[in-house]
Image (cartoon, rainbow, N blue to C red; front, side, top):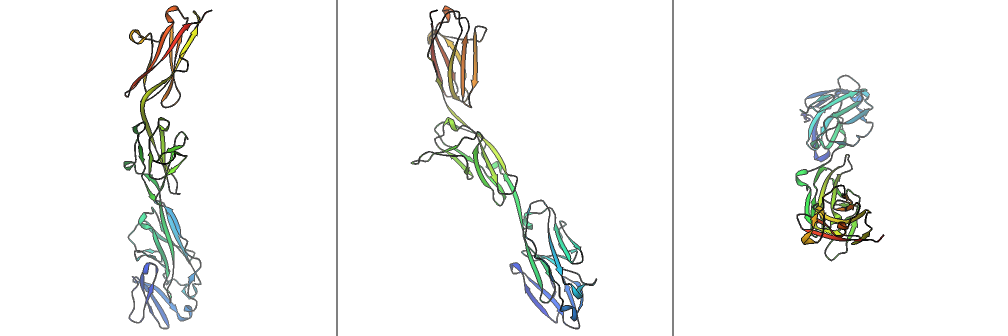
Length: 360
């Protein structure tokens, strides 16, 4: 704190209603004392040429953990240009703490230092900047009246997703509601944006409202009502606050439903001695066990892959596959009823195809 002398005590207000006591002894010589340090003797002739700031302090925005500095330039030193004058003081306005006087650091923080250069320039350096460093910083000259200028430090923090408060992969039944939550921290608070990994629109349904499709959606929560199999897949929650990097989390939504079999051609004909291919389209989640059988239900037998019978499965999306059975060198016993069957934990279904002889 500035210590007032018995002769004259001036009360000076600064930012955040901070008050500093400035002591001055008015005589043929003026003695300035700040925090117990003698700032030098200046003649009355020099007072008419008092120092003044050459440029304002520049407000600073810095990412937490990096380094920042404020530079204070004083011009017209005049009679103050002697080795006994101790320069300017740096003060943290909100905490009312004197940080440094001239190039001597008063605060106990080892992250701060002051560099005095070119006789009239004082730079306050803060390394490994923390959130509590935010606020107003004052550069002060102990003249009469006291002169000061203020710069504001804003410390920003890139976004970070709070994993323990964010949804993981989920499974829901088709027609029910899926709720996804994504929480993030940062300064300023991050904005959460949702989008689908496959680029398809997010489908929004509300009771009494028409269905709505959007590419992106803002908000910490995403609610998918009456969800369908077409909405299955990965969703990204992206947290950003205009201070890179943005971060994201991938959340997989699995929609379970009873298998469905679609048969494009239920009746196929081919001559003896030729080859034929049978196809079924299966939709199922969780993934189904698929197989082919020949014959009617009570007398059917499962077809095993060999040189005569070739079975294939080709996935078309997360829940759809095309089943293909190729029969080589058709014989009399190969004509008749075939079935493709799909079975998962929810249910079982089959589709039938009849193969008949096509006359040569």
